[in-house]
Image 1 (cartoon, rainbow, N blue to C red):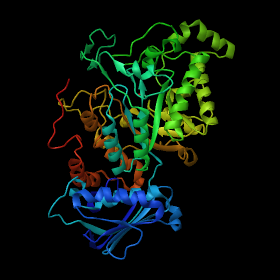
Image 2 (image 1 turned 90 degrees about the horizontal axis):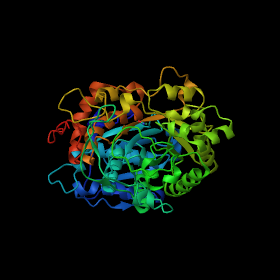
Image 3 (image 1 turned 135 degrees about the vertical axis):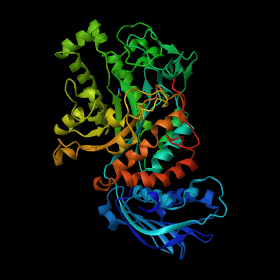
Image 4 (image 1 turned 45 degrees about the horizontal axis):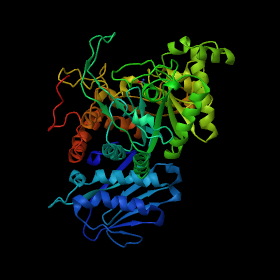
Length: 523
Ligand code: ACM
């Protein structure tokens, strides 16, 4: 496949000759695509050093970005890219298609095009091709947990740039955890004043009872202001990426409860968690909790235009509800049989509240227990069983099974790998992943919106380490999610990656296997 394109396009026809960028090349856009024209210039100008003026009309040596309603059958994100000797045409029915076509064009150029300063003596030639391309799945996601370790905003923007390069279009931003609350909420300042900071962090794994836990011995924290969040969301939208925020409830709430203990079940003061694992300290089921969560979500909805809003729902220890007189009374008053039904009622309330506001609830597959809320979309992480059950019941599903989409797992069995979580999900495992289970009929399969890679950061203390775990596995996942199923070819992917890695090198991505960086020592 030409030029090592990743993800592979749906259809590529090679032609003779090349198009070469020169000092007289213009970028031609129509009115509605001016911002994309400017972005194209930002991509292409630094390394080439060429003026690449953005104009409404050019006659020769031009890169044309245009919306073409006749290509409606290419769908929301498809595009046609034609490279001829005198012009490059990127046409699509909708702007995201033009944007993805632009990513393909970047990959057709020499890898030095990804450098951020002038590269002398380079020939900026693009092979002549005709590409008709569109994604297989609408949800091509990258999840990131910033609760266990805070990641700086600037690096979040870098991650979004890398997602865009791979035509990944959903950034699932896991913003709240037992170990840290990372988003400013104006109405509840203690969420960040208290909840964004923890006294210490566990180092490595521990035995079941935690008796041998080791700690780093220094505080950790950080949060994103609402201005930061707006910037991230806008930066993503400019790159056809939707940011789906996750606000965890009713579990993984310890940082919130450290700030506002009255929202819990015991009334006892709590600390922001310092160790990894599933924690007690879950939200109560009294009215004040819903008032709080809905006030929080009011601000979240203002910041995130995403139709999907993730409410967590995973790993909720229910003992506190069993022990709480108030929670038991609520269950009795509602005629519920057990705590699973109480959680289901909790999620159902949030589902109605979000639906009334034109949004859709997504939750981890535990939200199936005790009965699934009518509008809910299920994110299937404990294997695919939850996703299959939800799709059969007519619910939308995002596949996120631990095997092989948990990118916090080891990438190989090599003892030199840095400490990771549990099993091994190799690059080849990720590449071989099929998001639509055989158990589903064609109608049921239509409920599988796509899949995503999970980056839980207990053992990823900084962004370089996240990059090591994310890449190149997200390259493989991007192809699973974008390219036609029949086009999947591991040997060909490996060949293309030999070129693609030059792009990642130029972008300074600390991917596994990079020649100039070694894995960290285990620990
Ligand atoms: C999860 O890994 N608890 C969703």
